[in-house]
Image 1 (cartoon, rainbow, N blue to C red):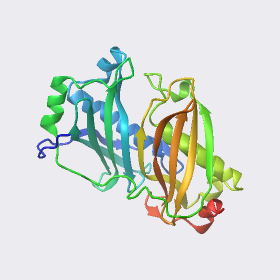
Image 2 (spheres, rainbow, N blue to C red; image 1 turned 180 degrees about the vertical axis):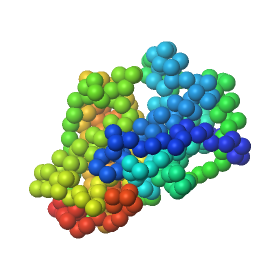
Image 3 (tube, helix red, strand yellow; image 1 turned 90 degrees about the vertical axis):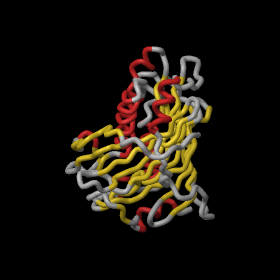
Image 4 (cartoon, helix red, strand yellow; image 1 turned 90 degrees about the horizontal axis):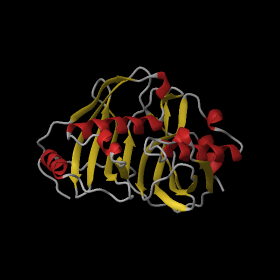
Length: 290
């Protein structure tokens, strides 16, 4: 993978976006909205290198499918925020490109960062080589950065914690134009599994929420191994591997009709109503006692 000196100003993929009511879950932006902003930003980058989503879809391809995703949230935006998203390419291969997404508020303070490796998938399900001109565009615009994004460690802390799972049929409200499960839906499915677990343990996300908003996505690193097709059944397997007052660490495996589609580690955090990270209360962690 080639990495050159920085010589390209970032793509201003989203500029001064005012957070809308429909992007919230409670007082803060929904975690899936962060993924949605990444998708919007990716389309802007694709247009900048003249490899548009429309042309790829016209050829029955799946544009810029994620292969590896690492994301960290510094602060969750609220309805009072304006959000900017800048994107730069970090690396390019024969068929892949790695992009860095940096989200900031109106004062330029960091909100979230993401590193995503993308490939475009052809009608036969294989990754398509980047067209020569697109490869050259990305190569000429690469920047030399290596930010740490995602969980600092994926290891278990040695404790004994519960396992749980949930299943959902992939229906039309969950799919995108390529008739695969929509990218932002995956963290939603993982969140549903967690909420069902809390209910089984005699509490709920609603009961635990108030001035503090627990179990928000904070750091995650997921690898996408296979697509999740329309009309399949997705099973979300959750293995809790670490509990701290700053984070709850869960290994996730998402299987479509028994085939592993996504594997990764998710760290959930707790945030106050302004979006700043705060510790979990003891009562929030009690459901994970065995």
